[in-house]
Length: 307
Image (tube, rainbow, N blue to C red; front, side, top):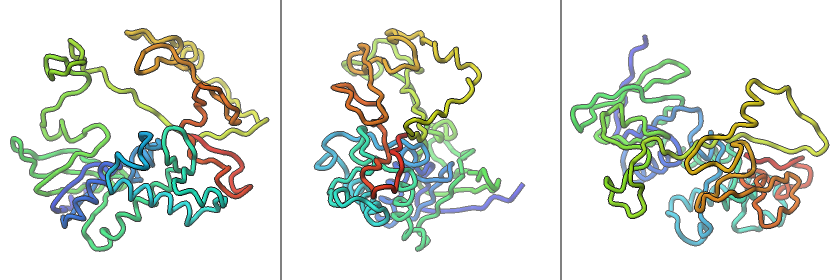
């Protein structure tokens, strides 16, 4: 086994998603030194390695965002205007949305998000103020009561281990990895009204009542082409699967009809990859669209791409 390398800083951040990067930048701009780990190859989390455009509110361009997040969004747009052959109309847009997805006012390719985040961190890395350890995950913690003395992390590609020391540690992982490792008290799921005093909380808590995962992957539509593959294992089961839920799900799990979150009434989505209007119904094809070929010079992209 390789000998562990000890790294010390004013702050150690576990997790290099958007929250971790924001935390690092705030600390660095305040004069602190930082060590940040990220278990994947890319920083950026949902926006990059997970392929999920930011789920923003409708007023994001005018208010309801931090100064640092606004800077990040501006840099994303600058990145496209600096590097891509946009149409004149797209280039002139103050609030350019490269993908024109419905979920966000700024839907971008994962690689663009990574590039901009790296630009933001580059000066601090160059000055030795930030050490970024990608493909590295915290595996153990040394804690004494409520005090964490150090974390041990391992790089999955090299097997190298690091002992990370700091006066302060931040958990910015996707699932709160440091909580059980450090013995920190935590709760999960839906808490009861008795526990929190919330007016609309449920009477009985349910630790397993958690938000579902979203798995995104890039898709494109080529008219007239057939890319149908052989039916995979369990295809028939999942095609007809109806989950047993309370309140009940309106039908098959893999279907365009789902339970509307605020009313729990059945609602059917549209799905039209050619861009044909679907009336008042949301066209799911446009929801997480990350490349709208109409924003770019003719022929640069053959098709649009959604995640």
